Image (cartoon, rainbow, N blue to C red; front, side, top):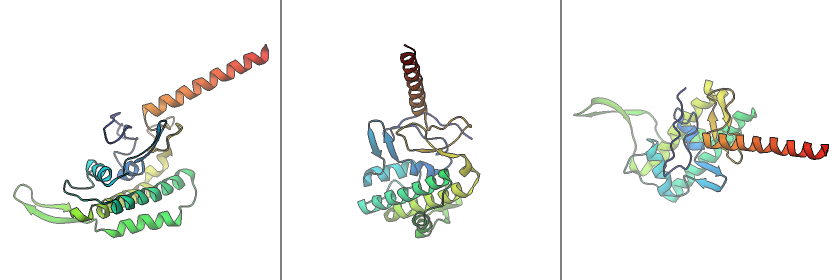
Amino acid sequence: MRGVTETVTAADPLPPAPGSAQHVALAFANTLLALPAGPVDLLDSPDAAVHWLRAHDLATDDAVLYEYCAGRLRELRSQLRALLSACVEGTPAPPAALQAVNTALTTAPSAALLRWDETRGLHRAPAHPADRAAEHAMAAVAADAAELLTGPDAELMVRCAATPCTRYLLRTHAARHWCSTRCGDRVRAARAYARRTQARDAAKQVD
């Protein structure tokens, strides 16, 4: 499994969680962030949403999104997170979440079309009409989600163990249950504080 580069961009205040490079569905689910300073939604406006889609090769430069489209993306994300949570917790998949992903799978054609140009000759490329960017992005995310949730990586998926983070990740090794070094540092700091508090309380009882 490839490592995650701890790079923070203007569009995302945290580095990518392990596994998000392999699965765009994981990256998409993690666009709702719970940070110590407060929540951050990377899809909170049409401009923010289309910027995120372009950064993940899910939309072209001429793609157009409206608030209705951004809202549909956020709704799919909510349902996808419900599926990821069920997978991690080992509980039944919520019917509404399954329906949302299946609807996204069939809303837009995902087959790559046959094309020709002077540079590449015959090649296949997905159709991305500028006015249907949301549908195509949702179909791509849903297809990857289906692959993630039914493939071997599903067993590696966990929720970040650092409070208040709620991102999902694929474990790179058995001991790591946090999504970034930043969250790992927070976990270690909390454990150290708990040990100091326990030692202080024990010392008071002895006195």
